Length: 247
Ligand code: SF4
Image (cartoon, rainbow, N blue to C red; front, side, top):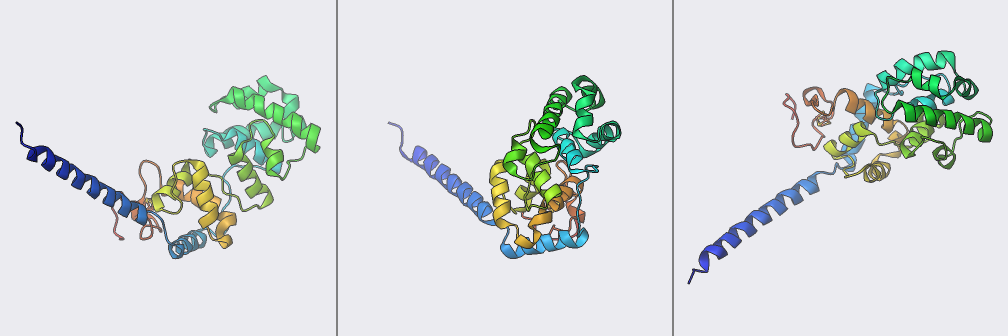
């Protein structure tokens, strides 16, 4: 008859490993959330570096901002600026874009991903702006999200940049920074957005969107975060920081 002790020993070892894992992850979970004081310091530093952060999407009107943000889905700001420079020179208003027509618009924005869908949406969006809003960009989330190609993220950017609302549009950069630092961890953008709205101090909420995007784009990069030169390094809770001189 096989002895009971090896399986028991195995079970004990496995239970101990499980407890260790649980405690390690519990420890990490407890430490994955920045304190209020650390969050104040974090935004104080980002604000000191860039007191008035701006979107990098080039635009000369709320309408152009809206179109640029719609075009920026799965595209870089640099790529969007390249096509909008041509587009807005020829068609700066909803009526002018509508007059271009869908196929000509698709040709102009052809270097962007999903350009056919984007062209279709932008044409429909211009038509709706003219029909419902006299060609102006509406300033409510509901009216914005009713426009073709405009989801929550685009509405958040437009509300923030054009109308000064303290919204935070969680894109890939913000999602990464919020998770890595422990500012507002979450598995999906909705959780991160809710976490940010709850945790970013009111005084910093207006510009938090751009500070976090720019930090993610230029410092806390996806593949090679520049932790050595990051002003948040001593606050950041990410365990896999790249090597550097500071703690
Ligand atoms: S220390 Fe590194 S991981 Fe943390 S915010 Fe800075 S760049 Fe990102």
